[in-house]
Length: 140
Image (cartoon, rainbow, N blue to C red; front, side, top):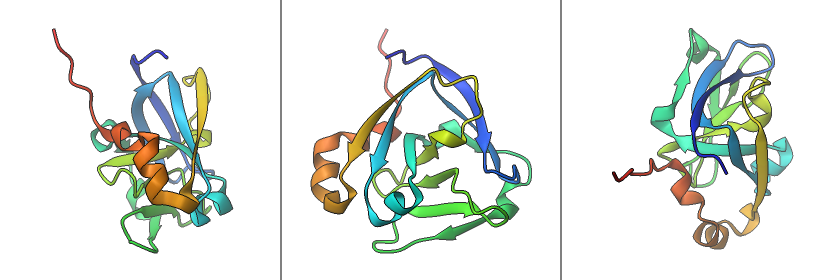
């Protein structure tokens, strides 16, 4: 897959929450079946936090929800209820972006991988998801 970064924009349904994120044109998204993701059908890709930026006054329209370990911070719009991004338990140093909330035109390929959130610990150890929020060092 092409790893060249492009700027994607997106947000929630009512557009009160808007953001931009640097990520490849082709992304790997995680289809998780944990109790929260499966109910919301949240399929997301993960980026390092420094590649994600909230825009304008979006912060004032966001509310949060946590449960279990309280490591994941589920953020959603107070107006329309859409979770367009969140801080995942698997990558607390990153941001999980709901790929369906990316504006059309910049994502050219989406590869879906399953994350067994019901058996979270073993899936975390086997999936490689932890590396998704790390910036790759370039040698030259």
